[in-house]
Amino acid sequence: MTSKAPVRSCDDVDEQALSYAEIKALCAGDPQIKEKMDLDVDVARLKVLKADHQSQQYRLEDKLMKYFPAEIEKTQGFIKGFQSDIRMVAAHPLPEEGFCGMEVNGTRFTEKAEAGEAILAVCKANRSLEPVPLGSYRGFKMELAFDSFQKEYQVLLKSEMTHRVPIGTSAAGNIQRLDNALAGIPARMEKAEQQLDNLRSQQEAAQAELGKPFPQEAELAEKCARLAELDALLNMDDRGNDDPNREETTEKPSVLAELRDRAGRIPPMTHRDEEVAL
Image (tube, rainbow, N blue to C red; front, side, top):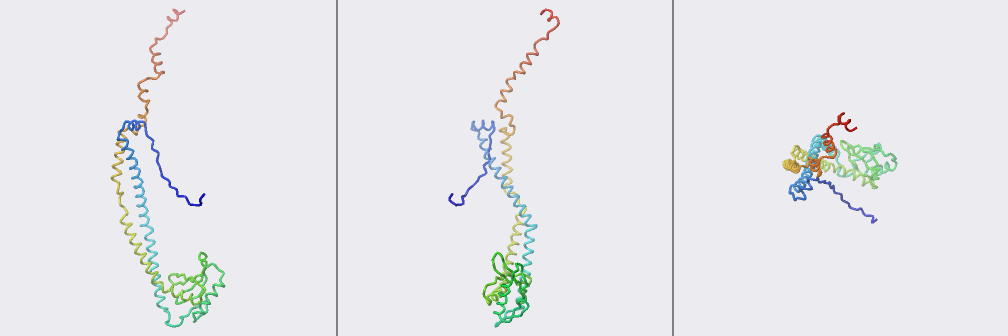
C-alpha cells in the first residue's frame, strides 16, 4: 500500500514433540530432560556447521582442480599478449612532431585531421552490426564495431590482444584516443600481473585449507554420545513403554480371556446326564 519494499524475515522453527516419559520426567523436575533438549539444539547446530564445512571442502577441491589452473593460464596468456603489443608500440613510436600516418579503407592519410574525418565517414556509412575492417595504425589492425549496449562506435586495435577505443565526434580527438589506448597497455599488463599474483595467493590459501578436519568434531561426537546415553536413560527410543495404559493392560486380563477360562472349567455333558434330564 505504501509502495515500499517490505523487509521480512523467516526462521526455521523445528517442532519438538515430547513423549509420555519425557512429560512425566519434565513434570517431576528431571534435569535430564532440559539437558536433552539443550543437546538436541547443540547437535543440530553442529551438524549444520559440519555440512557447511564439508561443502566448503568440496568447493575448494573443485577450485584447485579447475578454476585456479584455468584462470592462471588465461592470465598468463594476457600478460604474454600485452608484452607482445608493447613491443609492437615500441617498434612504431609517435614522432615528436607531425603524424605517423594511418591507413583507412585502403587510403593512406598523413594528416591527423584527415584520418579522423575518414574514420567518422566510415562510421556514418556503416550499417553492419558486426565488426568490419577499417585499416591499420602503428602496426595494429583496425576494425570498426558498434556496441549496442553503449550505443556507440568503437575502433578495435588488434595485434596479440584487442584494445577497444570508443569513437567521439572530434576527428583529431579520436586519433588522440587511439594513441592513449596504446600508451595504456603497460598499465593493463601491470593489472594482469597483480591479478596473477592474487590468483596464486588464493590457490596457496585454498591448498592449505583443503583437507582440514571439522574443528568441532570432538564436541559433536561427545554431545552425540551424551544424547544417546540420555535417550537410553529416559527410554526415548522405545515408544511402546510410553503408553500410560500399558501397566493396566498387563494387570487386568481381558473379558474374553476370562470367559474362555471359565468355559474350560465346566465339565462336558455325557449321555447319562441327558437321560436324567429327560
